[in-house]
Length: 556
Image (cartoon, rainbow, N blue to C red):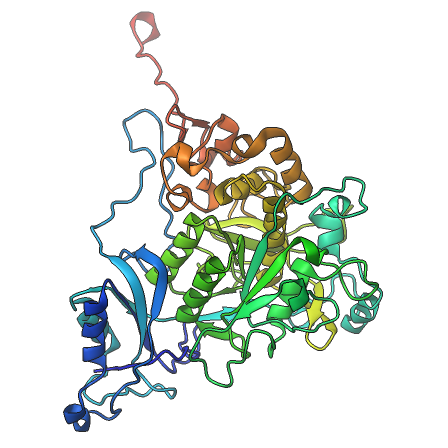
């Protein structure tokens, strides 16, 4: 027997840290399924003496906005990509959706604690968590039982890891931001400032947008950040301990730094300027998925994703990650994507090929980090940050080294990490959505890929380091203006007859479903990708050379 509680797990070591509290997430299809789980995990009073932990808590489970189709997806270190490289001859399979077993719809989930905060089993006669997961999966009405996992903020102070490339001290950077600094990523690299109010190519948003930041919280009242009068709202998952904190009081600083990159107020004479510097043109929704310690659980992230969508998010930005895949979290991301929300997450800071989640789900735009190097005229401008994770799910890159932004108590600091690159990308996505509201999230995502800047690499096109390239707001705007949603980002889900989550492939092959021209299928000049083209069925394929005719006569 195990005990149910809705408290968020902080100690499960999916990053190689020592195991502390372990918990299980259990999805259910109906009230009977929920009751079956509760009956198992909460022993009746006359059985309490047989267990060391006693009767479990009976707090409410999380109920999804709408039922989700949660298959028992493969877990582990893979990306979960749906398609491979296919030819168009009929002799090998073309892109198809993976076979899905008939599954009951999941209406909610319960978090079940298996150990206490010290990592000790709650019940003396049940100490094998894998067996308990197997037992819960056999209960009627249970759609999935799987291990809860830990997620962490993906950043570090600049001087700890990479140092300041141009030799200036961190203190010097902080002093300069008191006069509204022009940070290198926004003012040099992502190509957006000319479109701001008063710029040479000023544009007017066509719709309101909401950016939902799931992180450690937000320093409400910071002089350089939007406040509640600007539409700021937030959410803290229920059942958190006192040390977890609340959404509008950032005890970590990580979430406030991320928010500043997205939306620090411009033209106020102080601090820094965000990608979206006018708080009247967007709204923040803050989800406190990470506690003040900088860590949280998959269950808390799921709660925050659900809240973001319910509160009108157009973009979800997550500068966080965990090392194990989770079916419930992936399904929450898929549901958000199908509801028109573009989901963006940090690829990771391992400098290796490890997969982190949610970034490595196909429906999530995985962001790598680049550095300023010697500046725009140098050969090192835009080089991959040394820490940036590199794998086949990385999709796009953004400025992530030596990023100066807001921190609590009206302060500023320089951080590095894919956490810092991610808000550059999510903010550009939100800006594009405000200008092209008729485009679907998948089309905006593809347009950003199709217009990305080429980084300093040996061959053009996709690789596991930068993805398709570095985000370029101006080029994406030009492409969408001239080619419209379809020409820039492929067919819509209704035109293809699939949901957006079914179309999403992630990484190199993100654009494979819904192409309209061969250019949508181009990945790069690496011969391993082959010559790719858009088939009559609007799916990308690889051309197979015609076989040479057999030798005859004098040719033998």
